[in-house]
Image (cartoon, rainbow, N blue to C red):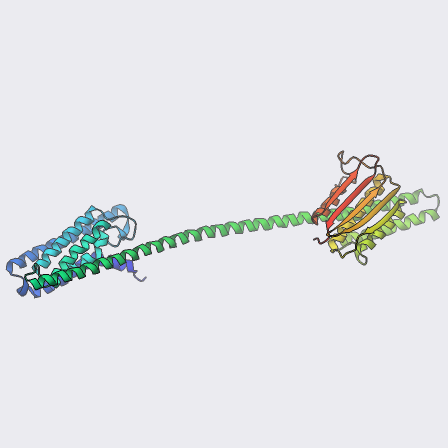
Length: 432
């Protein structure tokens, strides 16, 4: 696994001071005859030992605190500050002692500035922000003294060189520190943005999982609703075809059995057979979800006219059919719905009303089509008991309303005991 930039910096902050001190000590020893006498050499050795002891103690402290807190290698003061937390007093003391020792070594031999330059790298990590610039300036003093020849300067020219080099070092150190701080802030912002994106992705994945579960639930509900709707459709179709047809067959058979002779019974028997064949065909078409056979070759007005005529002949009720408005093409489901409603309304009138006259009107009214079925029968109270046509199966007026509502339409009933019945079905012309 490749080593990251942060890991390399942590390694530098831990082992870099030892390496720089070693290089500085080697060059200082080679130039000792030029810059140091015997006493200064002994002092330099003592100071180097103090520096080594300082770094050993600091490393031991960092490892001990890391072991106690579990903060890891990003512990503030022990490397780059990669986690929230300000440097503490211990890191300030460590930086001050190390800088003082580096200054003293550079005073003895300017080549020890090689070690002193480590202050440029970790001042912003070991010191609070209000002290970091001061730490950089103190390090700049040490570096300028080394670069100007020695500490302290011994001539005017050396003082001028020291001043210029100090200004240069200070500007460079503070400027680079400012840039590093800005880069660190940007890195922290990027890290925060990445963390927020990670949380957002987690929330998105959770939402997607919830949506998938919801979609599966909706599909199950839609499937169940489709099954229920198909059951209601078949129930209504069976009621409108088989039930009505069987009722007509029974009526004709009863009339045939009541006839005094075969000649008068034959027409009733033929009608019963025709009704049975017609009902069987309609039942098969209903199972296949096909349009009623009456609409297979005829438009809705023509199919209604034939239906009304056949019903009037079968029941003996004086019935008239009327079409108003401008005829317009209809969707197959609209035509089938209105035809089934008309058949149900006429069937109810024939079985329950005792009417002498009836009328069916189909009206094209701009954006909707209306079917009205009226009779002068005994009427009923719509608020009392089961709806008219309720034969225990609940497919009378309720079935008409259900058919119309599937096409965003409606069915209205006007009736009262002894005042006949008027059923009005309205369906949008453009449905479904």
